[in-house]
Image 1 (cartoon, chains in turn purple, cyan):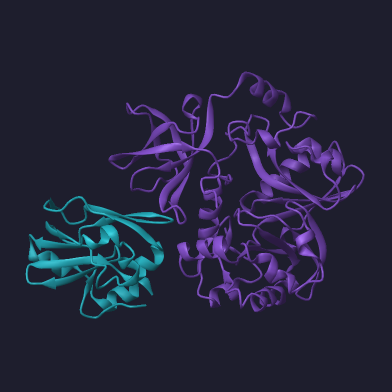
Image 2 (image 1 turned 135 degrees about the vertical axis):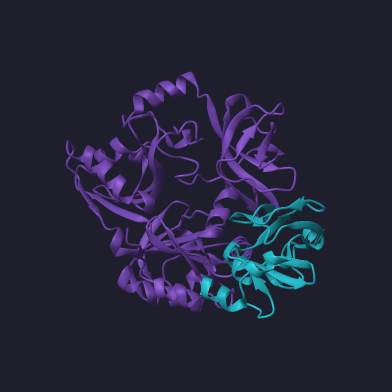
Length: 363
Length: 125
């Protein structure tokens, strides 16, 4: 498959980014150091180019009906200018993708999906749309997306817009002019747990906006941040990554996504999920912190004290803030309570870890 | 990219400094950049005889883990213990303070199999 390029591909290469194929796109994974970039976002402000993400418009009088059918969260609760984390359940108990649903107005919604799932999601939603007939359009190739994240994100971006950014509440958005770019979706969302905004901009205005952000951020020592740090930032906060922690075989209830699985409405596979909720799940996704030196990685076995396998790591890394190995993984439900001692099998060693409440990093 | 001319290299991105029948081994500047921030260097084979191509340890970076391979057969006579508390030395000074092990070479003819700086540059260029 030919690797797709995001609009600012050459900008990242000039900045010296290590570029790697990710979800079919050539993406910047690191500019300087994963740990430095991670701390920049936790303590200052950094910018991710996550233009590989997918965007679908859902419009017309049937828009809400389609969204309610395919997503697990209750989109009827949204007001104009509000966003919602949700997922697309499949028919077999698993998850097609996780996504954000933005309500522009009663008849206009934007779905933001993972890059690796754009085609799959579009097919899945289209299948249900046949009987419903909303206007569904994939505009993933038209938009760039910059996530400006960190405690200094608001002060930097405020220099570039007349929109009062502090008035945009978490998981709300507005459309406005910023850094000379018009019609930018300015969304108080992110995948870092450090606050900030995500800016959806048409590709032809992406470069001037990028440049304006970096100029405005000079004093705050703003830096470009790669996908490597994006992963460690989200892991410290215990946010799921599709393909690791959730996939076609994991139920949203097992994954701790009960809070976005609302049985106030009918949706794909809702009957079975409701039954699963009533009966309880056999395994649960938990966060854990290692008590010994070592780094857990995806697919490492999780064991009990006697060496019986009780689960599997789905994401793992060194936490730059805690300076310890951290991870997410599925364990049998008896081992899912915070404080439970578990062991991660790393090559020939078994390292002690403790199940922790999320987020793993509280700062 | 920094590829010192006076060292030998392996296709596994290790460098080898030859001093009689003892060689010092580390990973190259290219390798440390590819791995990113190194968090642990795990070598628990000090004192052991290990064959060429076998694993003598692992290096854990934030994002990835990688095995370390013996460039030649021999006995691991020393591990750079500084790396236990300061693994970042591998990133900061891969050919100097970031060295990993010293090997007493078993069969010096294996040294002939190592590649020189120009060949290594072709490999990573």
